[in-house]
Amino acid sequence: GFKRLKLDVESEGRLSSCHPFEKIKAKLYVRSPQSVADEAVVATASVNKQTVTVVPRDIEKTFYGIAYGKGMAMQTNPALGDWDPSFHSCRQLTVHPEASEDLRKQLAANRSSSSSSSSSSSTAAVNRVGRYASVDSFARQSLNAARSRLRELQSSDYIPRLQVEVKDTKKSLEVAEKVKHFRENDSRAANPFAAVGNADASDTAAMQREANVIHDYFCACCRADGPYSCSRADGNAVLRLVRERNRFNSPIGPEFTKGSINSVIEHFATGYCRVGATKQAEDGSSRDALDHYISITKRSLTGKTTSLNNMQKEADNLTVQIEALAKSTAESRAARAAARGNDNIAAANGSKPAALIQYLEENSGDRHIVFSMWHDVLRLVQQTLNRNGIECVFCHGSNDNMQAAIGSFTSGKVNVILLSARAKASGANLQCASHVIFLDPPGEHADHGATLEKQAIGRAVRMGQDKPVTVTRFCVEGTLEAALYSEIDRASSRITKRDDDQTYTITEGTDTMLARQVTIESADMGQDQDEEEDDDGIEHMETSTEEDRIKRRMEEARLNGTVIEVDDEDGDDSADAEE
Image (cartoon, rainbow, N blue to C red; front, side, top):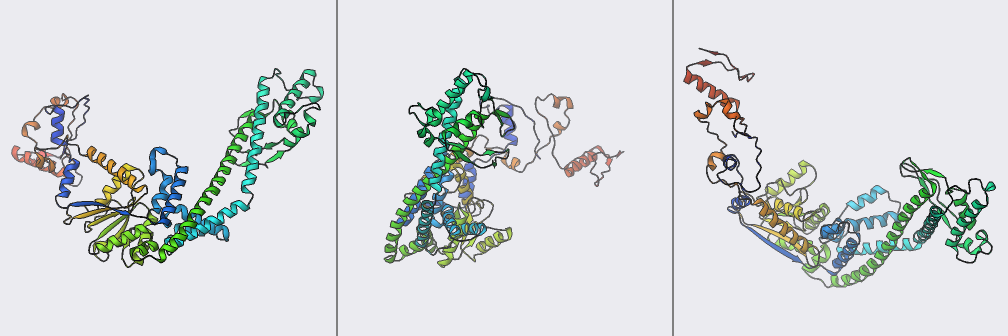
């Protein structure tokens, strides 16, 4: 076997071929660059790559445009580009609109809100695909769901109520910050309201100044009658008291509003936010009551503003979606009535499934592996193919189910197998196939996609393959798929260049090294132990088997004319030797 080496060699540049370390690597380190592996495979099988461009129908363009607009608005990591998870819905519906989980969620939410269905049934509805007879029927249901949701938002008081709450909370925060600014810049150091009945003239003046600050925020009119009796300020005054939260971030008590100038002034004078008052924060520490009120009010304002923006954005998106779908469904209905042949298949099943059906029919005598990144896409494609008379198997589920599916494909019972590019790209030996099909770009990013694609192709393109293999990508025109495929190609080139490292290609003694044989010369066996320890940084450890050691000892005993006893049961290397 090989001898293990413990080496510690540092070098700023490439070592010369005559360097001892390079000689050691040449003896013990065998590596096949990527080009060697590729040549070994290509020697037995040729690979042809092609792209099938799919022209989408207008209704599919409408769905894609809506989803892409949402993806741009929800993008979380611009550095990922079109690989960002916000565009997953776009990638799914390039195969079929119903494959989009977001669109199915919208339909399920509409059904659950219009009926008394449970959450479990709604979840089942989201997970179920193939409920609709055609793309047009799914579009009509999506249109009805969008109209229903918009009516719900417009008829309820969700948005108007949130608008009022945001406005009041913003006022409350601003007046609290003005009071805090006044207290930080006022000359008094003590609380003038701690004992109002005994306050001296300076404390009363300070109390009046703070009351004027509060009044001036709500009304800039003349204060001839004092801040407490201004009717205009009284009409504008508001102070929203946000609910406190415990250490588990759960709200405590009701949230209410003070609606008069007197109640607001008293809140800061003798109430919750009086000078010197403290409150226990969520982390258990004690902090100034006014600072605590400002902190929880800021958080409340952020939450309410986000909710309001989301609802308004949803209403705007629904309006755009309704207009686009209403126009497209009307046009699609008229176009489908006049459709013939493949156009009719596309109207019923979607443009990409129709292109797949046509491809499979043109190569009906061959076996095909169909990959998709999305499990729901494969389930939908399985139903579509079966409905159009093309038998196929979907490799998923338990190990027994997967083995049965692979067995049906390899035995020739079916000519089409559907595999997940995310989970089933590696492992199975399917070299009986002569076509590898990608319905959509695989991967979560370009490098991931290049790796998955290479592994998927390797199910059919492997040593022993004696037929030409055609690798086909399906790409919908005018979508992000073309850009994703291009990024996968660039990443694949980088990975191939990185793996094709010719540095340690072995040209001499390959047969000996591949057989993992080590020739032990008699001169080496006689070296002194001290000489081995003087060999800087190198420690030799034999890894020969017990059988090899026994044979070597027996040979030594024969040459020396001695007899040895070997205990095979306990494997002890020590044995009694007798003359």
